[in-house]
Length: 200
Image (cartoon, rainbow, N blue to C red; front, side, top):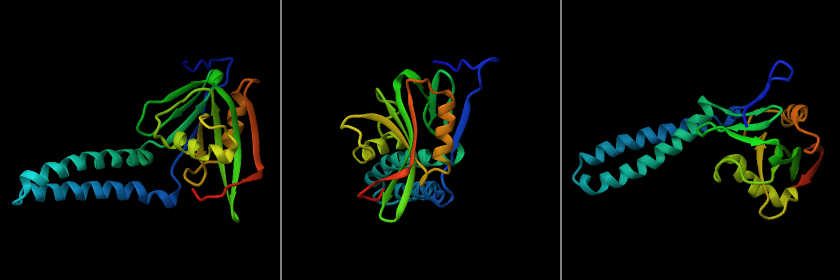
């Protein structure tokens, strides 16, 4: 469903989620490794075993380049969440925007997880059906954290982590609250951190 914001409706409110500064080295390292790999491929093709090793390394290089492109996307086109009266839209760095009708959303919550003395905050979106690619970070983290969050096996949703992305989970929750219909539960649960037995 397209954004129907108009003169009588508030415009969509974007929430941009860039990588945290300490993690910027990850995409930079991935790009550097891909470049060095292709330089090595060129050298192997010119060597005595180039007919065998060269194609194998080239195939691996294609996969490595794809991974580097995904990581580079987080620098050039950060993950973004748009909310309006009709939809909650998640734009991944290297994927088409995923528009989710509010009818598909059951709850939006800001949650805190405690591991030892460390507390991490998350924005959690519970859905009736799957959204975004299976291996995308928000969807895969929801699967991993579902048991800790008390969600049933097979539940669908998205999870956005403050420890990975430089954003305010509670602030993003308030943006969602402005547009979410009454049927969608919008809760700030960060005051009572949930025990988490493992690091993530």
